[in-house]
Image (cartoon, rainbow over all chains, first blue to last red; front, top):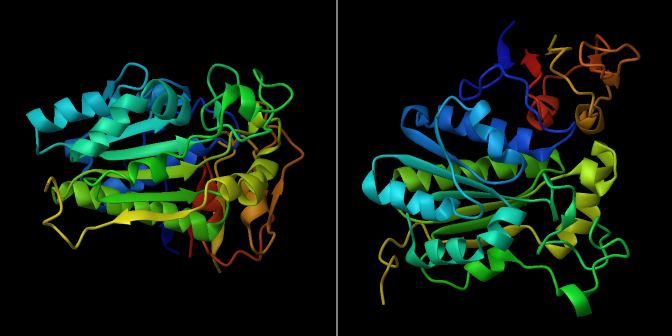
Length: 254
Length: 66
């Protein structure tokens, strides 16, 4: 009998600190699998964000830098420009990327830095206790919007993929989710495409992943997955927003 | 005959594998593991080796054999 699925080499044996049913563990596993498949583990630097995934450096068998709140794309820019042979995985949550680090991500994308950004969108600030994030849905209850997000007071959700797709330089932008087998496979494929693009020096890519936060949503993990399928992915439609791999002339033109 | 092995003390009993299993052959155990979670458990037969549970497991606690 052959083992057809095992823990990837990119992850060590430490038990993750994430809550039961957290999407971070699923994405960590996919990243580690992909780095192993593409044989990039030895030259990868993983940039941990501020947020629950700040401790990602406990789990990966790669090198690490932990960036200040929202600054992962800026750190990634410096690393990649100084050491173009490295593979940079800039891993950020929505509080980190869409709030504190909006400037950094927009400009890294606009410059077309050759990095891979993995953006975990769970519509709340996870680590600090489930406060309202820029990505929180209208009407969604969080610890700082106990009656639901009021758009007249707190505005509307920020859609990062759509926003970044208005700039010219990015090569690949896709939004996926973790709620079904088909979407899990799509997520894995998107991560692989993103790393592959970077390894071939093509330019900026971002994969946004709709991910559950059962603890702060006040749901069981299976309910949280259903909520992604029924509610979250209606507000954040899944799909490819940019895929210009074939046309190598576009980058940094005009 | 395909089968899965769940590492009992790594599992946090989140139930995502139970939700995703197309054959409903994974259940949440009545017993506790070392971390006081009720871990997921393979009922012992009916696995088709589709790897869905391993793919969705946040703690990489599942290994699949075929």
